[in-house]
Length: 247
Image (cartoon, one colour):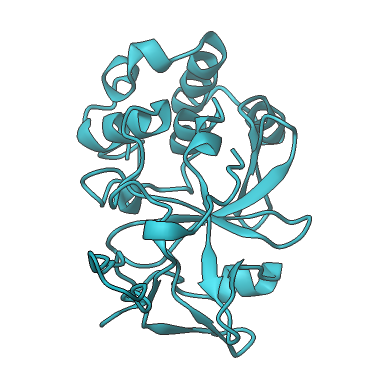
């Protein structure tokens, strides 16, 4: 992990329809949810554009700036075009040690996030809904996982084109969290984490808070699906597609 203060600054979108030539495909790896002993299939990736998110979204612009910059100076670690007055004040106050311990939470709320006593972070959406956020504990590609506490639905933030930007983020640093999430642009790139059920249906993964916090990885070993080409001119429709990506 990279810490801002040391060396680096490192929508609710509805599930897109899975049909036709974009038939559902699922990774073969079966993952164990350690806290509940529940077996789920690895996530479906056919709702991703390629293997990376929309790199023009300001969220990914902020990620690139946070990862690439090394100097501790505020103007060097964050794109001036993305810095609001409130965000600048917050970052200045944190870096300069101006905030008293009892002031931190109220200032975090102004930046659309909060931190529990155990350090866990929650993000506030534009609609005022709170989402738990945590990294998927694998080095690459570096997904961030989100959970809607109201129903347990799990979402993820995909990596950028390079595939490893999010893996370098330190969510224990208030400056990192504020820089990346205060403008709520993360909502525009978050995706529902879909899983294959035993009956073959595809549903969004739902986890309890304990499961969400305990599972090590939900995407480890999963691969972007490869769909077979449809046969042309055949009398019969193509039977299935490569629904499972080999390990």
